[in-house]
Image (cartoon, rainbow, N blue to C red; front, side, top):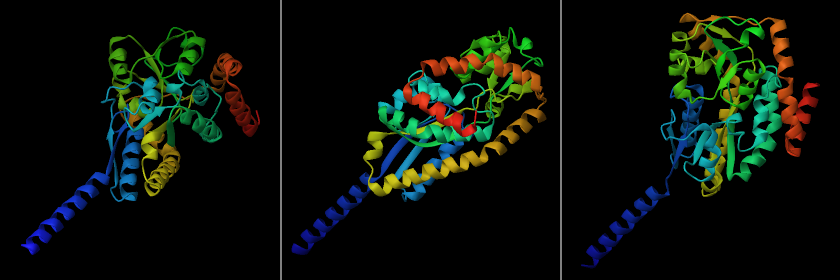
Amino acid sequence: MKKLTHLVLALTLGIGMIAGSAQAKTTWTANSVWPPNNHQTLALDEFAAKVKTLTAGELEITVSSGGALGYKGPELLKVVRDGMVQVSDMLISGVAGEEKIFQVVTLPFLALNFQESKLLNETARPYFDKTAAKWGQKILFISPWPGAGLWTKRPIASVAEMKGLKTRTYDKNGSLVVEAAGGTPYTLAFSEVYSSLATGVIDSVITSSPTAVDAKFWEVLKYHQPMNITIATDMINVNLKAFEKLDKKTQDAVVQAGLEMEEAMWKKQASIDGEKIDICTKNGMQTLVPSADFMKALAVITEKIRTDWLQDASPEAKALYAEFMAKVKR
């Protein structure tokens, strides 16, 4: 009888230990508004896989893409702050309505090329980290987009020819560019872009090549003018309370996975852009490189956008701007 009692006790303890081990495992949800095959969603998938490997499965992150959770881009700072998801990818300039300093990333023609965009984001990172912390979150990594060009139904060769365009833009800065050129900006959800082009609600889009492929622009548009009007970046943020509940070893693994993904995504950007433009070309779209005069005129008419932002910027945002301008010697 005593042996049976000991056996029952041992089994009970064993089951308890197994249950405790199972309960120790942590699961998070990561949100992406981008389609499953977009490079930003794929980066989030890769990040989740790295975390699972580095934590030996103790932390599993399930990625929900395509905006399936119902959250919109401009509200994602609040979504992460309030713990509605533990992790979310968000367009940095897309949440500038909450924090104006985030608008600096896509000020038109502030970063003139990809190298300057990388420098701008590196310069901004300490300021962005501080801002994210104020919202109860931590930036795990920043991931770039290729430069945004103008995608149209007719060729555009001058600022004058931009007048009257009905253009979908992805943030406030893009809208200001369209207005400066005499067009009408439309802020539409990505899911509405294709139908709006097909029905004539809009006739053009300012965006980068991955979005053009995601939306199959070749079915509704004909021309691509690469301009680097803006060069956007996403930040992938984690709710700080959720992060701090992890043990130190798991926290370190999450941070390491973020560092690895950030390095990888900046290295991949040029090849991603080339691949996506090739897909558009193979499907019948034409890429028209703007003239130097066109680009100069566009930079001139958008100068007020940059100066207006700077005039109303916070002391931290002004310091960031000055630091970047000193680095690029402008």
